[in-house]
Image (tube, rainbow, N blue to C red; front, side):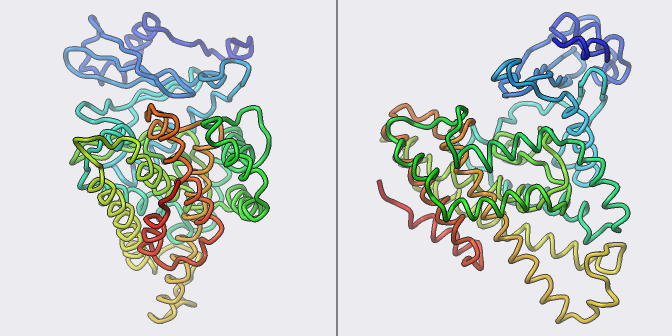
Length: 424
């Protein structure tokens, strides 16, 4: 560990030092009912970046997450700012204020220690990605996620806020520059060039990975998306809203891990969620067996994608209409002062947002197949050739949507396209 980290009061906690820390921290002790004599500590961090512990007393539990000064899955050869913990805690608090039903509360944040104490999301909650692999239906997922996305994106945008307030928040989150740079590299750059970090299901996808690197049409589109991601401070996004950042039961949905949060295009969050559902759809054939062909489940995933967008659009426009005479400075009521004009503006806005979401969602799908970090949906398919067939369909689907995203006028048309991609 660097001497600079030690000088700032940072030290990585292990189970013993964590217990001592909790006993000395009133907010964390209180979250355990004040019963801190006999604590059980369990490390659960299967993530790429952080230590995550569940700490339990006989009166309650708390999650403690500590950011390390490097990428945990690579080691200290890839340094990484600990300040990401500050942005994660800030975004949890901000999004939690806007959508308390779907975001865990933060009890305690220690900037020097890069440490967050937050509500433990109890079993039977599991990571959504694992539920999708297991073929579990979540009837309220579209309802809950559309609620989360509509509220967090609308209320942090210029449709609701003054430019003064907006710029103040943009400036604050601009400091999360290292996490943005990581996204810029692994989503918008590495998959389209020779990079030591890229990996794929070799030898099966060798030609497919090469085709991505040699596709000039794809590179023109990805350049536009990368510019938009870097330059367009549209709303406070989660920044990593894939199915591994969502915990679910059939009647509860909780969004975790917003350490990539900053002001960026709304479509990046929406696309991440929808794109990962499309990956789950294409992975299903690899998880099918004699007892379950997964066909009905694939239809449920498609229905969830469709409902997620349509409900999001409905709720987002509902918020816009409700607050159209408020402080938002994007469309001043003195100018957009008749229903027809406002309706035209909203239609144009939502069509653009759909196209952004499709572009970013496709980019997220591509990087999960030929970039550094893959998804368990595919990686848990044991037969490598069967896995490659699923991955290739997802890759071809993503490339086609990325290039042709402006031709889609509704999510239903996207679903038709996804279903049409069925070859080896």
